[in-house]
Image (tube, rainbow, N blue to C red; front, side, top):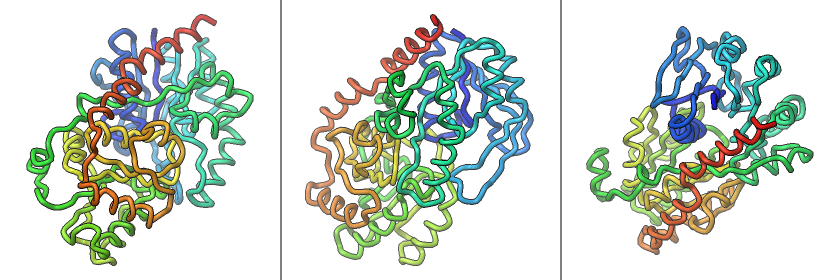
Length: 383
């Protein structure tokens, strides 16, 4: 098969969807011709073509439109419809319904190709009025139409399908859970990880990895961390390490400074990809306080690394992590504090690491997931 992947970003951009696509398509590239059409990694760059682990990546010159209130910039990828026709694939796989419109659909249809869409981003709920209403308006006016026009609909969780796919199309929607590279994300030893990263060997380290946006709930985590320190639930030298990028970074740093936590809170961007597994290993706990989350790749990475996980019981997170996390209500600062207190009383250990890794191998193996996508693509090509 010739498959063209449509997503605004691709490796080395290190978002959750991008890690999913990299893992999936490096598997499929061993048997099929894969082309990715994405945006330039930086503003004002000309069109270029890369080869990433057997995947042809076309990065188009791109105009970035920063719109106040959106969690990420809206992108105008120059010449995308011409590029779609030039690739001439059998299947075009859309992975972000917010960036592709009728022009792209017409380009796919003009060469008699099939259109697939994966719901990585659920209809937003309980974030803020602007985001919730904006997402609903978008899906009513275009997102649901795009989903309905697709020959194949997949979703990364049952929750993502139920909340986002129009009811009349649910019967033909296939849920394919995300995976995790359990050979990369695995227990490596806390001292080894901290020595590699230059972190304090003895400090209690709480980790979060996510974009710095309202959806991810980091403001509640920061407040809870401060309360846990002040209430002596965790030591004064404990560290909160948050890894990501996004518009809330400055606000989070200001709030940490206001609370007198400057020395305790680190907001890290642009860490090297090879170091991410070591940050998980360096942590005593991973906190995943999202207000909504279609799936929850970071929680799987933490579990695979042998790290206890505190997570919001929201969206697709429980589907992904099952019984292997301590669940809290979204927006619950006190819930995070009590969960940290519980972990402290349990010695900050995950007692069933072997069982958890067996669960991940069984349900979240990328080889099996790639096979699911391959069979789904082949099925629509027969019709």
